[in-house]
Image (spheres, rainbow, N blue to C red):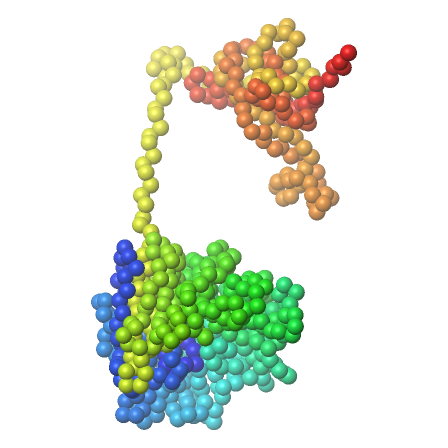
Length: 635
């Protein structure tokens, strides 16, 4: 899932530019976007990055100009980052500060940036759109004007075609959304999207709304935390179809493994859509023996009205540990990664779970050792299914905090890389990342005060080489039968006739089928052919089953009242007999190969003949009961 937008003092926005195709190794390109300078707005050590499937990528951040904070954008062009551009320069009052930039990109170089502008608690909401790589950013559009309460905390998510949704808050309590189509922003529904407009929808990085957009860009899902009437929070989810919001659905996980939800932490949310499924992840706290509370992280499918079963993505099980800070990344094909931070008594560090089909696998560490007291991990998955996760990491007590990443999938699977430059000092959390065009893109702060820098890291995501299948050898051409090159007419189709059993019950033995004379006491069955042929014998066990649609299945307690049917279960193996024209008599003891004793029961014997010209007969079958041989008493 490409990055969505959060309520952070600093966010990165990289203008659209196609990233280079993947190379054969996990090469890293690290670039200082801005700095060192004391003018960077580094109040919350946060960085955001986004990338589209075609390699379009974007980074954005806040920087002071003459003491006023503005939104700047740098673009990745020809393998290098361009000089940063100020994208809020079209506002008439340049004395008003900008804040909380939100970023999303689409294929073809499309970039959308939303931000708040105005004095504190008096902000209006604005957006700028870059339609394509070759076009300039359009003038700022006012999405919402200040009218007594501030518009803040924008969040953006786009599909690969560049369409999607923008969410934001009014007065820090009421949640709204706009559908983004081209350069047009259209309000979703009549207005407030809170489940209860009288209760606060919580903004912020952990509790704020998250967005998932389907591959068409015409629908999506939002999830958010909302204050309860007495105490605690509830996570809600809504499906959005165009500009029509669906019903708000309670996402509470009431219990897990017998532990009840303690109602203290039902927040820290993310949403991702891909492979025809919508995934909602959240951080939930449960009661444990001794009055302790443990936080867990789960992911569930959501169809717009109901949630699927909760799946663990934190790797904790019943250990005395906590997990939080969850992020999901799922590409359009449904290949995904989930990351979360784990650390209480048992373990410390960020972990990754891999999505396979509809199941999230066991979580494993991104980096060890990691003694960071808290770390916001992030992940992204390319269209190839190869992805990476990044996290803030402190290798040992007193070590310089850095950003590290691990690749998942492809020939570089498991590769651990330090994305930040230790020479630049302490690194911040990466917070968000993106993947596209064979690259993983991340950005973060390094340094403090006058040594502060915005650093971008572009990591190759190598994919397995395309393997050309070995050529299939041609099937040898069979010589035509003599009739095809002479005046003699070729034979037409034929059938097995007069297939009869001497008795409907056959005494079992271990001898293979064999031809005998018509007067032999061993004769069990006979059949006739119009001409010589090779006859193949096969067996099926006959039993009573129950009808299930068009199939006859084994009877169970559940289907025992369904209509009965004859069920055939093939028996492994076959036997071949070279039969002459006319009547053939066989000795048959219920087994197709010598030395094997078949189980007693009812069977169906099927014969198919093939003549010298390759023509096959229609199958001929007969049912019989296989019984055990009589035991002789010993005197």
